Image: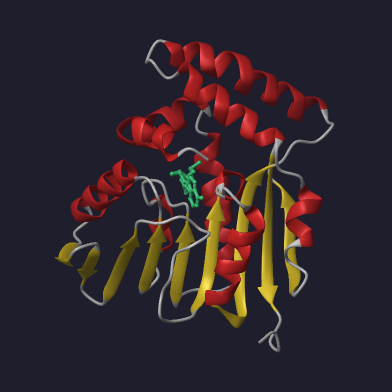
Length: 231
Ligand SMILES: C[S@@+](CC[C@H](N)C(=O)[O-])C[C@H]1O[C@@H](n2cnc3c(N)ncnc32)[C@H](O)[C@@H]1O
């Protein structure tokens, strides 16, 4: 995905997302966080395609946020600082015993020098430039027995899914036109067409699906566990 689109959206991203989804995205995130906490309560988290860092609501003791848009990273930094984190060195923040590290990079080529307990990808995968490379790179940093948790919009044949896609491809770009963001939202709508559940499943062969659920309308949640003897 062209990161310039997200650079342009960054400052308005949280507000606009709430408005155009009628708050539904927040409900999806709430369900996602609640479900993840059933399986893993704390540890080292890596959130991919973090945008403004909303997955920080998981509140793990150490959290990596990987996001390629420099403008999103700026908004994320300010948000964490407002929440009491202090930037002790560039892109590294602390609050009491909690640590945050922001990495400005794409999923396909970031590096960290430890393995993590949980990877979260909330509305993230369809933005990857190369899904296979992105997942391969993420898999490298996940511990055996660790969790990979995904929420993604995936097209299906039901009426509501079609209605939402129509809304995303027509109404949202029209409304966003008033903010000068018509083309950006057209592209975001189109990106949903590109991702299929079977493509995701193909890439997670070494994983056990511990929970898979349709979130109302068009989103799907997958909680997967990496096999213990994967290395
Ligand atoms: C829909 S937003 C993600 C929302 C976010 N995960 C959340 O919890 O609110 C998509 C994000 O993907 C990022 N992105 C674009 N290309 C990417 C890539 N190749 N790898 C990782 N992130 C990418 C964009 O910059 C954007 O911030």
